[in-house]
Length: 414
Image 1 (cartoon, helix red, strand yellow):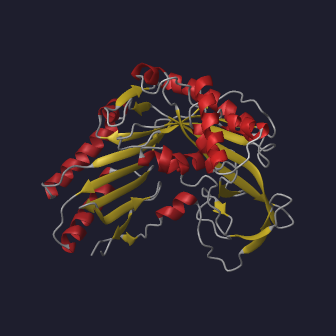
Image 2 (image 1 turned 180 degrees about the vertical axis):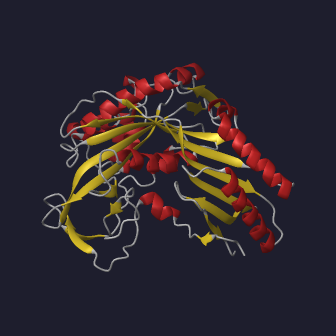
Image 3 (image 1 turned 30 degrees about the vertical axis):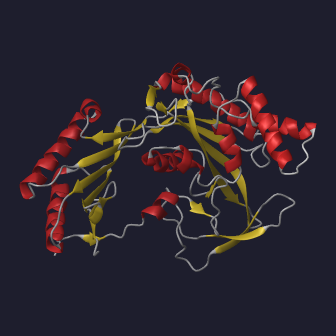
């Protein structure tokens, strides 16, 4: 039996979303304000909040109006999770989780985003695109007057990525990379005295590439263009200004505060995600972005050259931890770590230990041994999570919240 070990049930999805079923039977029923023409819908505000740092949500849960776009646009799966959770984390500085409720973006639609995420067309490309679209509609018996042609022409010019005359030109692709990958919207609601909830603010995350991968022909080689941070920041700020001007023309977003944040992606094969690098708040109906504030967040892989250069002591500690494990189980393949830092201060350390086990007894014994190492070697000022796996299956998890003296453990039965 494990001594002084508590059983911890993983509820990761609930923690990430800040959405939990109420443990209080007296849930509050409210009416969610919609457009004047739409019928008001009754909603439920859960009375229970997981912690002071997580947002409560309105039930029934409404998914994003652009659901699925992020998975089609952001190539690194690690970036998808970090972009979403990071935007909520930054939003707490502007929208207090104790006062306001969280809802996925309801205003930026999939159709809208796909138009914005494309390239702006040259005059020649625009003319052909409009002609092709008009011909397509007419073939299906639709009437296309001049007003509709203008609307079609307008839609084809909404792309926020640079124009390129010839996408088969390696030189043009490198000189005009796609910088923008995704635009993520989060909404924040307040409860009124008449038991309605209404939108009081929004956050918009703008994902920018650190590396542009492209092909000049089908089946041809993939080329890569590195995008330096300075260029990314300049392009990202200009894109954010254009996005602000556009969302101010959307009913519901025209006169509320909006927080913008720039996210710098990692390359497609990176084992750790990128991070937010800048943020700014625009008040009420303002249509111009002022100064930006640098965000000092980063995700560091251990072991790595970057980890050794920036956080040598942490990397050495993980190496010593790995050496101790090797004494107990010499045929393991190594410890992989990810550290999340804010202002160069470690906030969370996640370690993954891949091993081959031949019985539940080995899992229990190894987990117990690792638990002891955690108590001996790792300070408790940051969150710590250790995942013990075999054949890509989770065997056990050791978890300790920042400030706790003793970790909690969950050993999976299957």
